Image (cartoon, rainbow, N blue to C red; front, top):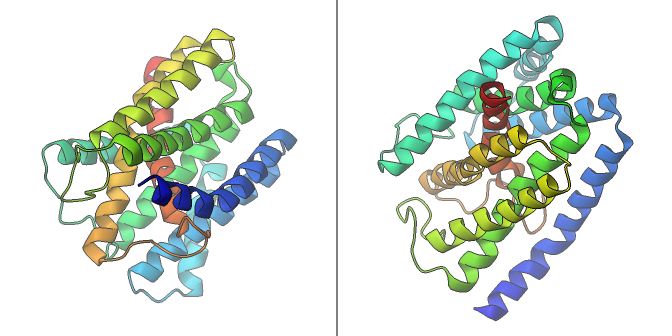
Length: 270
């Protein structure tokens, strides 16, 4: 087991380091135009990968429509973003309840392109909201974005490491038999330590720390959501864009759920 864990870490490490350094550099520059451009590119890649997995033809009209939808926040107001993010959050909460009740909604499928578009837009609108309307959080928005993304990565890393070493109790074996309760607890502990450190050094207010904690379980909800999609389609990875990690959905599945839930939580708490 230790040898297999070491092999997997070595396989994933190069791409993970490149992504981490790139993200840190982009946020350090604090160039909002660059970040919004990257958000647009990420959205394209997410939708393209979903359409490929749904065996749909990708045409110019679909791409133009998608760009128009992403640009809607520029023409509408903060309230439009809040509404869409709130609706997306209700979906994720509902899916989390379905997981606990061991129910599987029939519309959860790569064949449902409307679902893919809806969830990607919820994620992108959450990122855009952070960049354009987060001044009232009384914190540097680039640092806040880093914390949200890093929290999700920590949850994933903690769950993987702890689950690989001592994991014995599958959480939802019918969806992903390799993900365990021990891994879930490990991921939570990793994030708790990080949040306690940044709160202790006054980098974040208690309200934002609480919002981060409320959104934490949805890192696992997003992960299980994509696992269900892949299991139904009998595939291991959503793509091969990122060496050692799979496709862009494989890398961002947890973020896609966490970002809107975090925004939703802050609007309730802050």
